[in-house]
Image 1 (cartoon, rainbow, N blue to C red):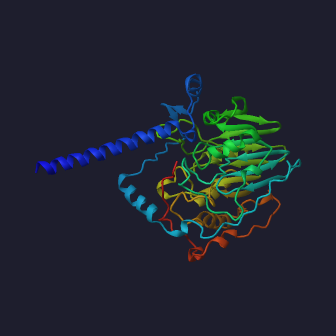
Image 2: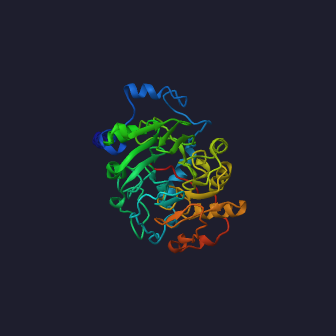
Image 3: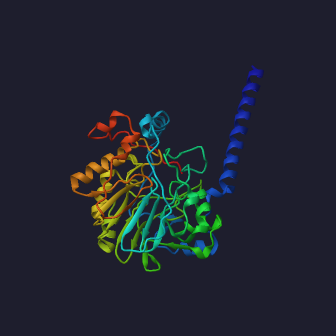
Length: 397
């Protein structure tokens, strides 16, 4: 009996030491690996605390936004995620074609190139603006998790040059990518970020005088183009202890000829109408439309809500974003575009869905094909109404 107890105690000790080493290793990794970024400190933190949106040690949403999940829901969600259907990802390479040879176009038109998810190159009035340039292979702090869907023509970040500005909505890995910033930072004139997101850039070597951080409703000028950080309903954080230590934002971009809106990540709420009333109507909106679930809808819109938000903004042309690149939820990878397209047709909204990498001109009545069907082989595409009950996973941050 004594020998048995000794063996049990020895096994427990080994298990305890293994767990302790694992925890210490993770803590060291999170606190030393550069991809986790950095938070504001000292005088900078004191300045950020003066924001009306910074309360009790963290940034807050305009509405109470409870993201806590009931303990009873977690096992089922984890099981669904680990055993999920194969149609959450495309079964073929996605059609794509990139051409970055064009110089800045100096005219009244807006040229848009979508990289998948929320990464966009926008060329307007002689300026080249990259928005949330997550251009790397994995939307996570490690390369083996949350990999990008395969593209027929992969993104070659080395071909992207002469960027006048980068706009960053928030610091989650599927929007702020460390390898992409390292590759781009010497080719970028200036970075515009939500409040405190610039601290990550500073740690990665971006010069402080190339960074402008804006609180909600604050603006800055890129020559004659006005950039305004506007509210969103979301959260932030890249590590274990920095939840909501930086802000999240949507963005208004106003030129001489066009008004553009970028949603960032957001649950549906009244801020869309407020932004529309203040800065609309918008010639073009880029609206988050993926990685949703009913339990998570306070921070990620359902596709039908994305279309309604576009209407609230008084938008003329809408492009669904936040889909087509990563598997961050349990819905089928085509559900966002199918549901958004159906709702847009119902509400007479002009919806555009370009092939990844193609450049199109906003408002030129471009012809867009249902390109995703080339990479989809399942009968689910023929269903009129996708199943709302399979929409959940906590995004990997």
